[in-house]
Length: 157
Image (cartoon, rainbow, N blue to C red; front, side):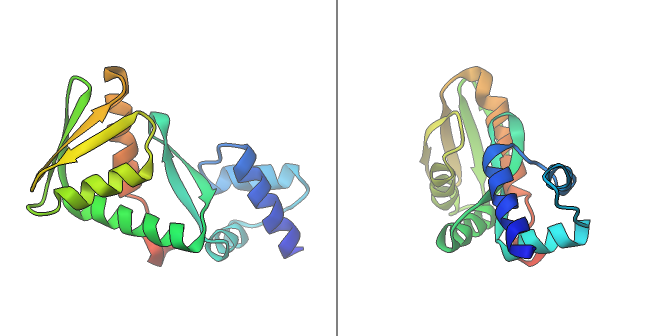
């Protein structure tokens, strides 16, 4: 039953934008798998699912490989520990960081492939992050913020 439920979870997160455990529980129930929140939480931990940032500031569950999971946790820590502020200037987001961390934060941003981000240039404590369209700048800031504030590996997601 566990293997079938976990296979269904993978299918659901690949086919639907599932943001919460409640949404996942509802989809599982519709698919014939009655599960408690504790069971779903345990499955998420065991399967090493994570929440990824998507356009519009939304997050959703996704499955990543062990190395990718490790990288995502590092990127999250770098963003959370390094970013001091973010401000838009047209289609550029000016990101202020802790001195010496701008290059690490910029590399993390580049590797996250956030929708709308064309690329970034980092100095010592400032990053210019170019956004494809000025209208997307706010959404990109929301996505970065939500990803950075995500739970860390001790919390399971």
